[in-house]
Image 1 (spheres, helix red, strand yellow):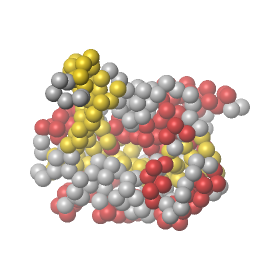
Image 2 (cartoon, rainbow, N blue to C red; image 1 turned 60 degrees about the vertical axis):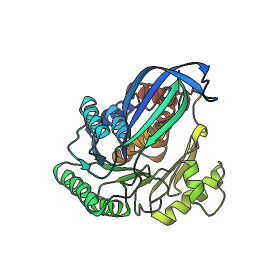
Image 3 (tube, one colour; image 1 turned 90 degrees about the vertical axis):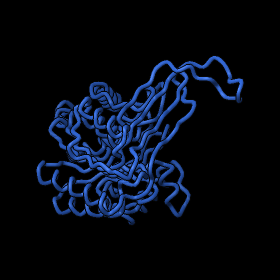
Image 4 (cartoon, one colour; image 1 turned 30 degrees about the vertical axis):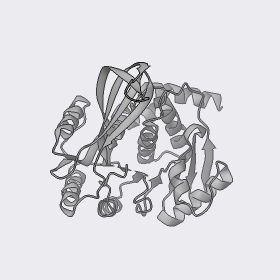
Amino acid sequence: MKTEELFEAFNRLNVLIVGDVMIDRYWTGKVDRISPEAPVPVVALQRSDIRLGGAANVALNIKALGATPYLCSIIGADEAGNQFQQLLPKNNISSKYLSISDTRRTTVKTRILAGSQQMLRIDEEDLNVLSTIEASKLLQSIKELLDQREIHVILFQDYNKGVLSEQVIREVMLEAVRRDIPTAVDPKRANFWAYKRVNLFKPNLKEIQQQLPFTLSIDEESLNQAARYINSKLGNRLSLITLSDKGLFIDDNGQKNGLHPTQVRNIADVCGAGDAVISVAALGLALGLDAHTIARLANLAGGQVCEQVGVVAVNKQQLFQEYIALLYTQR
């Protein structure tokens, strides 16, 4: 597939995103003195901003790449939940498949910044697993969507906030297998090994190090060993391990594997890099791209969003240009 055709093909994809959503709030100001009350900086607030975060930021990335995201999650019946619902249509994302809980708070992460420097983060959240009633409401929305739309890939985005319970994971995975829909997972600690028969599994280095019974180092022999262990636990096809500033590693059941180092960039903020990586990788999976093409595109996307402050979505045109340049240099 030619590069132009590949990027055009993104536009035809429908993506079901299941996971923890949140609001990312930014309070930005100027610091020029220390408080007389305590040895802490005084931030003179200049502006505030709220953005879609968590699995909703993945939806923003999917939208930015040209595909259609369908977001299935649960928010609270609170002010933050209302703000979240208002942000979705402003970003051309449907709120139809959201469920509302009377017992859970909408997750809000408030970051206090001095210029581009993050000083403090405040989290408002409930971490308890969904109740049986809440899980049933969410699963009903997911099954309705699957009956109504042709879905090309299901993406699980886990932040350990309780939405992706064992029940939800199991039943959605069963639906995916029954309907022959490929699946991609960005896992977190609580249900790390719950995604049996997933197609693409994308932990970051810290997450996989915490789960392995052996020490993992950043070299191909060690990473291949990690990929084999993941496959023995999940029966997955693709293992994609993000390595922070070292890039990423991908393995296709031992047939194709390799390290993909990052490009030199001016890093402003690493927040949201994983969201960009899993978004591009999931679309590549839906299109049946080979492992190395998925890795190249995902690596570029993750690096790109690190050049901006705060959680932002990938720029499709920039990704296209960087991918063309990468292919040219690797001839």
